[in-house]
Amino acid sequence: MDEGGTGGRSGFLAALGVAGTPEQDELLQRELELLADPRARAAARRQEPLDTLVGFLAGTGLAVPPAVLGRFRVQLAAATRQDTAPDAAADRSPREAVHRCLTGLFGRPAESLAAQLELLIADCGADGRVLHHWTVRTRYAEAYDLCQVWALALDEPLNLDLEPAATVDEVYATEAALAAKFGSEAVDGRAGIDGPDGQRVAVADLVGELTELVLLDRWALVDWRHWTTESPSLGWPAVLVQAQYRLRQLASATLPSSGTTRPVEPTPPVDPTAGRHGQAHHLLAAHAPDRQHIRRSHQDPTPDATRLQLADLAWAVRRRAAAPGSPAAPARTADRLAELLRHHPTMLPPPPGTDRAPWPGPVPGPDRLPFTAWELRERFPGLRCLLGHHRELLRRGPLEEYHTTHLPELLVRQACAAHLRSSGAAPGRAAAALAGELAALAVLFTGDAQLDQAVALLGEPPRDADPQVPWWDLLGWPAWLRAAVAELALPDQWGRTSGSRSARTG
Image (cartoon, rainbow, N blue to C red; front, side, top):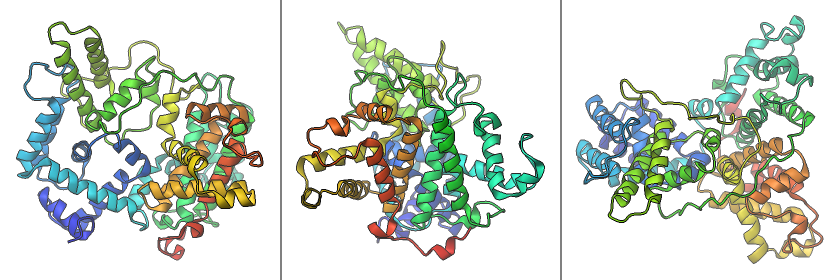
């Protein structure tokens, strides 16, 4: 039996006590597609398959027997309660308690279920089929909302600064949709996006989503027939490109204020082999020197699993702190973990009578620059991987053609190819995710010096100052990254694996 194919899905559903109907199989496919997203996979590398299983069951819509799912979620909520610290005197850690509960509820080792789910996610990520329309709407919610407003703008003016008759035109519908989202003064150039209430981060995120969708279309991975009831005459990709162009104009009209990045803070790296608490260590590192990083991290794909890691690590640290002669540092760390646990979001409802309190003290808003090295690593995991391949190629090659032809673009192509091979995802999804990151980066840092500074925080010097870059390769980071986006947008070069474009009209 193919563990990751149809038989594997049926076996997994049966293990959960779910009837293998077409409806349940489709629902499982949708949830697997979200967990197989390259950004979700980047976060999953900081945890073990058991954590992924916990996060999956905490938020699944599958028809798992209510009594079973209810008991599991009660146990999980008790293990991650916000109003009490984990009991260091308990013989069993919060994580072990939840996993033992899973084994008892489903009658088989939780590790076996987790391994089964991991195989399904890996198989789904490598599958080149067209993405389910629910997955696309969920993953690209801001872009979907913009297109919904665009469709409404064809019928009535949403912005009083525009002539009512003008919104009938599809071009002006795009302007109206952007004005409704960011304000007419920003869109027509009368106000920038970097003031006290600046929206540069929001603009960058939307540009990233639009870029990803355009790339997914080029890789034949989107079915636009399920996008909206209204369809533009030139198709949705044309509208997305137009909106992306206008947003780039909006971003370039006002340059970010000076100091868009901060010096590299002494953030301890997360040991990728320490999966039991990898995500908790990741957030703990972000908790110092201030709290704004948590607010500006991307949405956690498995928030309940992260909370369980935080509770489990706090329990382990408190046990060490309770030992005779223990220094004060473990106790302070446990207090920070408890604070993170109180404020980290979850898919489960809070226990009765409790609420998730806001961060104490003033916190910079999520749209305010500057960024720190932690934030850049969090927002651009694909870029970090691409830069790593760039560095590895310069050190070890093979780069015979690059050196003999003196064509800088060949290094770009080889680095992109190495990234797509190593991602573990279908080439189209990996290419789209990386192109979206690069597009968002170009909006956040519009000047060459700013972009060099941002890339430096990810560990790479300016290319013209790098002794390993040959003298004839004159591509600076802005041009190099633009060339990478151009390479990723050529699916036939990498071998298209998806269905025909005729099935995805729109």
